[in-house]
Length: 123
Image (tube, rainbow, N blue to C red; front, side, top):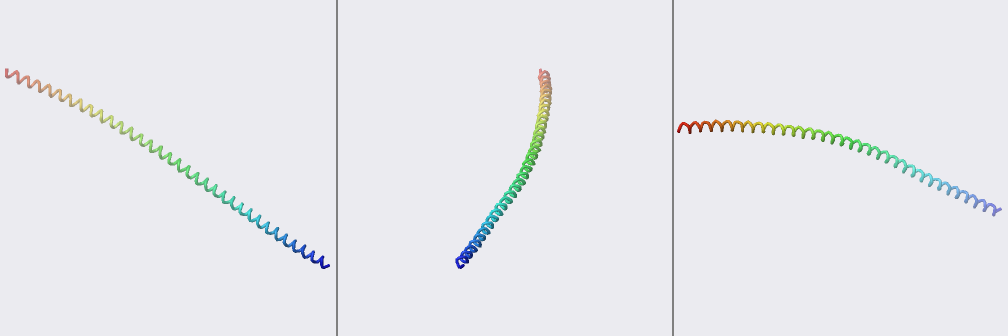
């Protein structure tokens, strides 16, 4: 009987230790699953934040492209305006030069006539 009782005590101790081992193993497995789940949640959150930042940056890049196109258009307009103004000023200066040449010719002709008259009177 003593042997049976000793055997039962050993069996009970083994059962308790086995149950404790299984419980600790289950807790460790659950903790690992929880860590994996938390890591997956953090990864998903990071991916969503990354996508949001990427979308914001792409929108900003598109805005900069539009602004650059507007600036280019305005610079082209300004350059064309300056070119037209410059051409008009050159044309006006050309006309003034021709007027001055015509005046100079006229004055020269009048001066030559006057000098001719003076020389003719002396003779």
